Image (tube, rainbow, N blue to C red; front, side, top):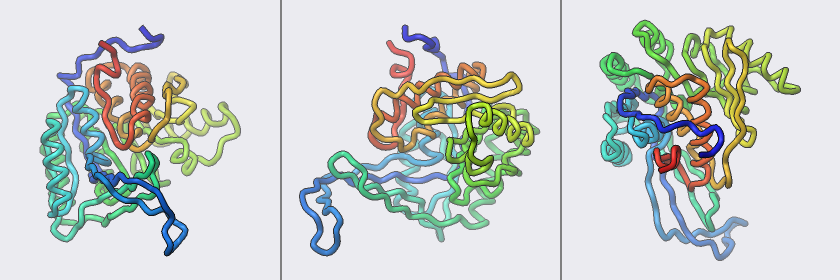
Length: 313
């Protein structure tokens, strides 16, 4: 057994509610053989396409792939991409409570891939309206009692403008709350159980650190000021670090080959949520999430990690 490998965990009793920015990841794959005569850009002859769950929907997919019971709440448009997200999520065994906004185009990230490399990403997005957000909040209140862990997946697309109200309701219900943050205003995450920024996101809030001691001081000061129990910093090739009242615990990166980092943060958050929902301690959850992140970056595009990949046969 690989050193530090977590014993197999049964996630069947884990109940997770994922709320946040739901989106569709589209991929156009093609061949590149020439440069456009109109501009110095490659011409991609598209030969196939693929669609995958993105954003909060990818978090839900990753948790469901481990065997957890997952419900997904968010806002999509009353359009083909929104229906596609719903159909794919249901196929993955996810309970969908998506609010449809007829004035909103579903958020899409379109990636153009040539020669196994991402050449271009095109984003289609718009903030949801108040009526759809109200329906989304009603769904959260309805589903929250049945969840052990609430995951808030914030991509800054507007689905979590009620985040403080949602966090307050979850805390009053005694739920574990995990937030994958966005932006430089972390006060709205006050009182959550786990915050999972990456290096760039944390640096935007606390400033650049000189060394590990300075990082620990800044991260712990932020965590204490917001009343957050655990701050899990994802550090790419440097692995992950868990900050808590007990101090700091770090694990090295486990990626053997980095192929595509798309959606790796979603996988990390999903595994943390599933582990905590299954009753495992935070340090064990971080170690397994670190392993999962190392696996998923070896895959092209947003992807999920299976129990077999995590634990072995």
